Image (cartoon, rainbow, N blue to C red; front, side):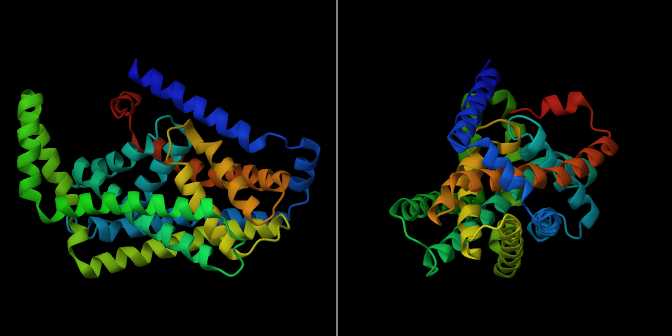
Length: 328
């Protein structure tokens, strides 16, 4: 029943945001913008934007190094492709569980440690995306807007809070384990031993945060992949003859990252388009042009990683029963 309610809420959020993003858009003008796009630049934009996935796989290796050094890149890449395919095509952000699960099947990395490493992955993403948003806000080409500056402040506070919580676990793992054991022993004593093992593996997965050298390496990988992603967005601006600076791509990217974090249906439709429309409006881009850009880029950029992920999932031998058990 709870899953059904989550699914209904996600659908409602998606439909509402998609309606807002496309409301008032004259469809005849929308298709004019789409048809006028430069096909060569469109293909280039989609290719560059999808480079974020192999870069993510490469960035995952130093995060996991304390737990499992020298994991073959191919295994990291396959798990990454399957995970992001699942986020595009399956409900409830299934890829957030399927990515670490697939890695745990192919390597000696425990599922809990792989899942924890993914949390670290997301924290680095949030820091770098916020940093790039700050660059966009400081750019002389930024037209201004108090609301967007408030967005940056609130999001930064949330990321800082999460980072503090993770560092508490990293530097006080025994205390964290004792608290977890006490809570589990009181609430679910039958599963206390299992929860202890999972919690320990989770804390081990955060080991990257202890090593300054590895911290810098992971940060640089994160910076590279998000700058590359922004370049893909900016090339799509050029493909659709939109007069927006590169810093606009950094801002739009930040808004999209925040928007897709809310519960919604597969593929993040609605939140992606609404965030892109709001960001591009700051730079004077018309609602129709922004909607045409957002929907075109969104759909086209999903295709390559979804096809690749489906291929690897089919080869993995993961059954439907296994997928059902991964549901939160």
